Image (cartoon, rainbow, N blue to C red; front, side, top):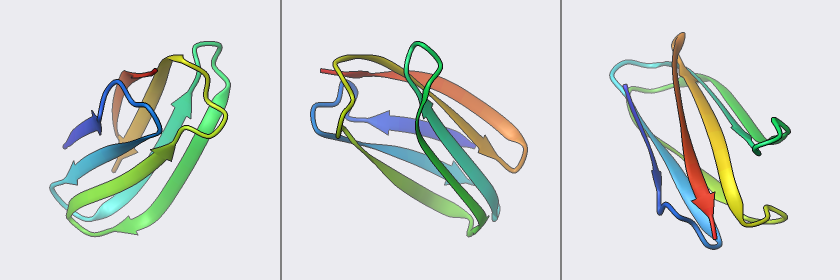
Length: 83
C-alpha cells in the first residue's frame, strides 16, 4: 500500500492518492496541527488499484497539515503544506 499527496505544497487543491493491492476499506482523516479534524472520508468497499480523494483548501489557513490513511487495517500517516 502506498499513499501520496500532490501537489505538496498545495495552493487551492491537492489529491490523496492511495494504491490498494487488494479491495477493501479506506478511511482518510486530515488534521490541523492542533489535532482538529479538517476532513474525513470513509469507504467500506474500494476496488484494488488507485483510489483518489481531493482536498479543497476552503477555509484551511496556510500551514502544515497531517493526514492519516487506514487501508484494510494498515495505517499510513504523513503531512502536507498549504501555501
